[in-house]
Image (cartoon, rainbow, N blue to C red):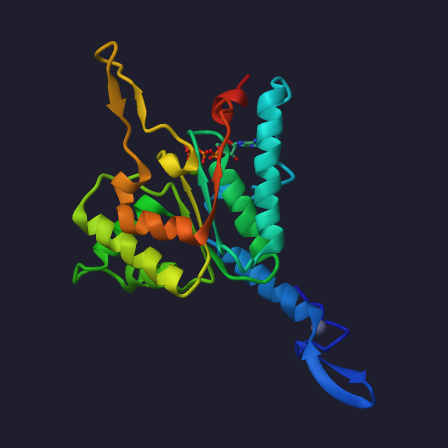
Length: 254
Ligand SMILES: Nc1ncnc2c1ncn2[C@@H]1O[C@H](COP(=O)(O)OP(=O)(O)OP(=O)(O)O)[C@@H](O)[C@H]1O
Ligand SMILES: [Mg+2]
Ligand SMILES: [Zn+2]
């Protein structure tokens, strides 16, 4: 197939501009388009979320309260992507129940940011931890080590389902190291979790399922990732609590 050569720059990626009697070179828009195409291919987003956008995020029509609450969240996430990179808090943390659209919205934000020319990488938290762990095996390939490097260094890191892993000291240390590094470098992180946090307005006690009249303590974000990582996360992220809406995975089937 014959490639069409850009008429503006003849394929060099640079074009000459004349301004105030001086001439200089600037990047041709075609080079930026090619760069964005590469960035979009490189996000590592799983196919289920590869097309997630703000436009195909559907608000519930049967429940005005849920509709308004979810519309508000959509607006906040859109605002985050539009203002990116914001100077106050560079990251985004979405907290809420399963199926409320956290990963969808986070992926939509990541894609919107990548479309502006930033490098964004998706990692599933559990999968990333496994890859980091296996990178310590002598037999492991370089791809696992590279995964950790990417998670540290990518301009924007999306970490999906934060804390979805049993607690070990090793996990806590690894997550703290990753978040501390990114926080110190002021590198944005977009994270989702369904673990409650009292500072995000969640109750961490619930009525006991086993003994009536008693309460159970719910596992919190801090329980899973440690106090230090959790503290830095709140420092660097706009924290958004998902409203109580029906699980979309079930809503979709109705
Ligand atoms: N409001 C919505 N409009 C359109 N699609 C949605 C909406 N909410 C969720 N979805 C879709 O439903 C599926 C589940 O949503 P998603 O994965 O974002 O939920 P989640 O909050 O991340 O859940 P979990 O906590 O289990 O990870 C996805 O395919 C997502 O694209
Ligand atoms: Mg999710
Ligand atoms: Zn060109």
